[in-house]
Image (cartoon, rainbow, N blue to C red; front, top):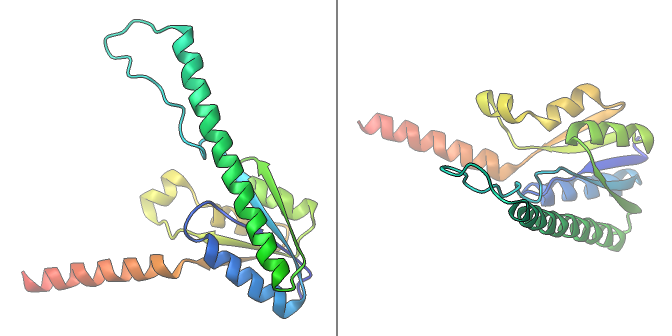
Length: 180
């Protein structure tokens, strides 16, 4: 069925759910896992820019200092992502699943699809944050991009907590509207 599964992991709460689904599927099919983390320039935090209101200029030294803060933050982000990937490989190995990890810098959707082609994967597992409407339009949907551009099948894992939270919010809003 599947022999090489690329598992695209973000740095959010859905990571654990995606890991467990991929591990279960790999154990059932005997597939090898590649845990992939795609780093983005803003992943470690945005470049801290000073408030220049009322200033006509600021010194090069100030710019360099802010750049140093950003680089330090980005390195911490990079190291944390690497550690998370190593942890997943260790856990998969303990479960008897052959796995490896790779960390790249790229646009997330494009990076996942390129890696799926290069490796070559016969399945990509990706998470979904459940963005709809304006949020999806402004922030994009990595899972949607991957579904339409990957060279293989794609399994989209939804975060059950996100769905529960949304259902609770809808129920609360409905109850509030009924009371009024």
